[in-house]
Image (cartoon, rainbow, N blue to C red; front, side):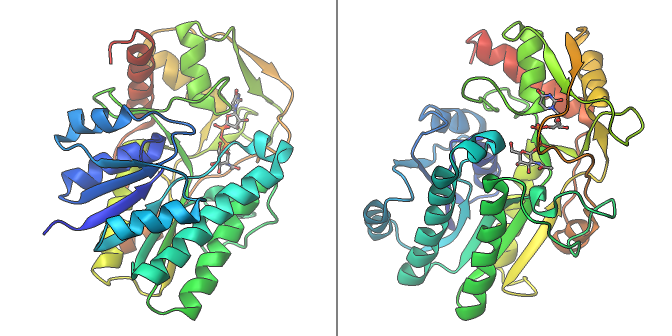
Length: 343
Ligand code: UD1
């Protein structure tokens, strides 16, 4: 029988790509999503790519009663991958209670349900933001965590702490936190991708929307950082590579290959790319000269961070495959397809 995996936030950006990869690997996917930042139609797109339509249950994981109904309906769940969360750094500063409430209550509800209904394994979306500005680069998993710069970042740190404490107190529960660096790009079919609400905060959707003519110009937030070209450095990884890491992590838990009951891994390419290099990559793959201007720094930005992914490479047997240009190309294909409504 196929193993059943619950994917919260499964119609969202990373969740939808992960659902595709799970189905391709023979898992039975059940999505929970409140459609706050996504659309039900994504389940059809997942079917177009994978040949299987995942079950979609539309409700908020913060709703304990609905969650109980869900677990009474779906039995024999092997694992949960928990994506559903708010993720806009700036918005989290303006609405901290929304962020703490949504991101933490959803996690606590799921863990309580796991205990109650006997679901043993959880994969959690964490972020490289837990490291703040690391002293040593590339950053390894044993780098000290820094005080979070935003309520969003804090929810990831507290989320990891909740998992550490819960897995310590209850040996029936195992968890893996995946610390994402900067996911970009879209599925090569251009049927699913990132679709931010309103003005994008993240770099790549802003680049593709500007090139498409939806935004006047990109603001490059600072060129006076201590980096070779003065712009900030990040580690951009293709979302399909990232999605595959979730499949590996879930299998590791199900097969009991985890070394401790709470594990955490850096997911990145290991390559630092500046904002100006990311723009050059876009210009190279699209043949478009991007309109941009250098402005002041964005409050709260880290100067430079990129992953040492060797622990994930070694322990999970996972590594990124796509190059920056390949990822950028899929982001551009997706932007074109979604705007021209050819999807
Ligand atoms: C941050 C967090 C990440 C989190 C993500 C959620 C860090 C290191 N990373 O990503 O964990 O999951 O927010 O949204 O804290 N940029 C511009 N112009 C723009 C937009 C961005 O120049 O219009 C620059 C930024 O200054 C930054 C880079 O592009 O240097 C990437 O920015 P962004 O895509 O917003 O991601 P992070 O801030 O790295």
